[in-house]
Image 1 (cartoon, one colour):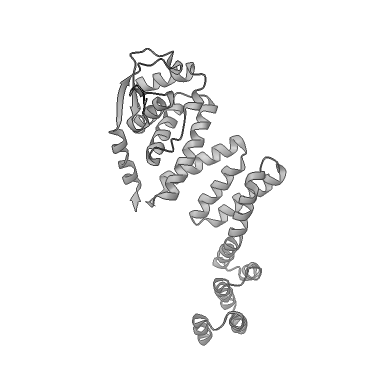
Image 2 (cartoon, rainbow, N blue to C red):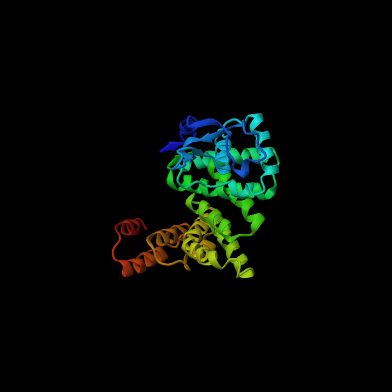
Length: 298
């Protein structure tokens, strides 16, 4: 189990692999940069030319190095350099990449650092959006593949980024991932609300949402019964027993559903109904020792 601090401590090993190299290249992507300019690059991103054995540095390598170096602290000179890149590089947006061959945590740190820089220099919305799109992918990978204690810091940022991406694109996959994040966190009611919103939007924009509609629909169906159980339990906690039973009676048979209904009936003083409910359940599924103990107490 990792803590947020341990995840951040991993940054040190990536930081140690950052080197500063003079840009001695004829690559047109760097035509606006003085040839003796020194830039940070992350060693694992560099590729050697097989014939000449020289190192080829791409603009995306430089962007990766800048973002990674800036995760903890951003030198003013790097901010100025990034501003020049944004001003002079016509396809800068294509240089922001999630490098699959690189350690996922390195991608996470680099995209975080770059996001911080882009926000600080007030880059174009399109550039910020593309970086956040990739950062959300990186955050999702970290959340799904690393066991993290006190995950709130990453989770809050992840959800904030997904909300921003959805509001700016109305792309259904972002509302789907947002719902899945709450579902994984055990907040089934909020996840259900998001899936419901997604289904409503998909009905309005059927062509645009075609690819993601089935995924949202399946997620909604999976979570519906669980969220209804939670809703019934919530009503029970406020002594709204009849309303809770109305919901419970519509749920598919399960031991948890039966226990929840027994709880409501007990609080209503309906002991005879409790016996009938237990007998009905056991007639279908066989004797349950826990339910038999409840019968003895009635």
